[in-house]
Length: 358
Image 1 (cartoon, rainbow, N blue to C red):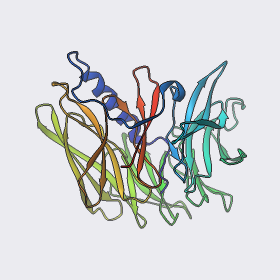
Image 2 (cartoon, one colour; image 1 turned 45 degrees about the horizontal axis):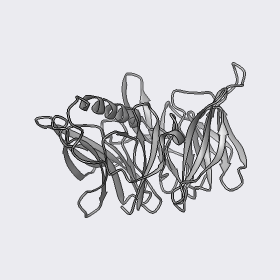
Image 3 (cartoon, helix red, strand yellow; image 1 turned 30 degrees about the horizontal axis):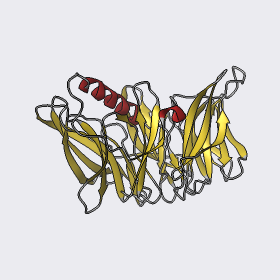
């Protein structure tokens, strides 16, 4: 499973809900009672900027890759790498308009989706390039027309690539047309693609497994909601599910569980009480550690906070960081011992934080 993914269906909704919750809690009075414990500041807001695609850890866990928007004479974007020990930054790749970022398991190469602004009206305007981190060499792998979703996903062995409704077999040079939707992850043996397909009459997408051999698909048991996170048991995706019910006052009871997409079997993970419904979560690469942001406390009493929980099988959930602002999804390092995330400021700029030793 690729640890880091391009933008996912749930991300916009959860970030929007978090922003609304933050705005609603700003009602005057004393500041929140608890001090923030955000972890280590890797990059302040002036170095990250206004636009950032998903974070990518290098395999050895020494660097984090991110996309930064740059305003010069023309708008442009760059892929930067920040060293998590020294906080030094190096530029990896630059392009007028990078829309997505992905990587294979060794993270020695990255895959960049970018909008092309200098092509003719009838020419493909979306391109996927492979960038070698050590040498800076760039290979153009595919061109297509910009669609509703332009996420890029690559299998760990780098054989299969998904971009703009195309499933590419880079070994055979073939392409399979996909329905409109968002690619989520490849199964461990790369024979299946977890895909959330758009539906014409609803905003809820349908979870499907698509064969990488011939493009045939099978509908999955679904969470009944937007994609949140997943891990694999063999070739069966375990889809993270969030349920909630009113718990009195300003609080809700939030239950996290997972459903086996193939068999429909369910497993409870954890339960929380808090005033907010927004949950952002990610599994570690080995599927053993879940990191999840949960809103807690009382907005009325100004004790509200958003807590980052780490959940491991057989252990109680543990709080490893807390913030009062809006945050991006937690992204676990290859070892599963560190987590990185973006912190959103009121001016829409982002800082980059890391919590280690979790």
